[in-house]
Length: 112
Length: 116
Image 1: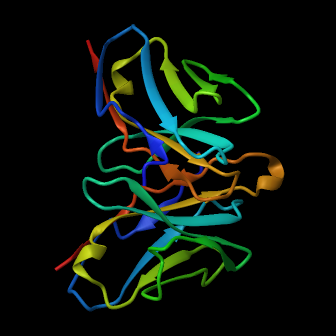
Image 2: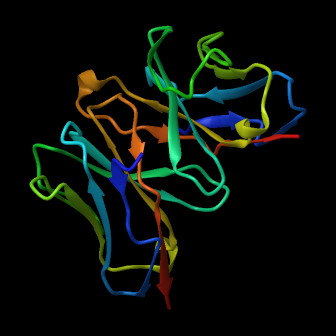
């Protein structure tokens, strides 16, 4: 099932710089997109979401951008901090309260 | 901050045995979910539950699986006659009703199920 793809298994970023994580999807029926952060031995923690009627949503250091024509979304983290080192998952659904379809995750490493 | 809690954190079971995984969703949430992640693979949806019935399920959720809300706080996943390939991390999640707009799902820390 490749409906949601995160093509970068890992990303290394200098502390204080911008981290950009990417996600592509194929199903045009998706209308709700979420980013989760996961530490080892913990469950996914919700970070930020965006509905398909928007192209940007911002929450503190985190901004998600949605390009519907390209079926692409990205998560920007500015500035990156050591505590941001984790695996980041992109997920999509056909609406609220429906099943989430997950990407494979990107491991973000913030270098001091 | 309210959270989803799951017990046990690790369950080891002999193949063929029944296992029950337990979850306490966030108290004002109305939708409940189970997902699993087999080691090295993507997170996969199993089932969602609303108003005391299954609202959505995947192909994985066959007759071997069942869910129940036995009381006002717990949400359980039962796996009958477990198989080796059931070994995975099982995550419970909950969300508010979509009548409030798009609502994210919030996850517990998971139960690691090991089938021997």
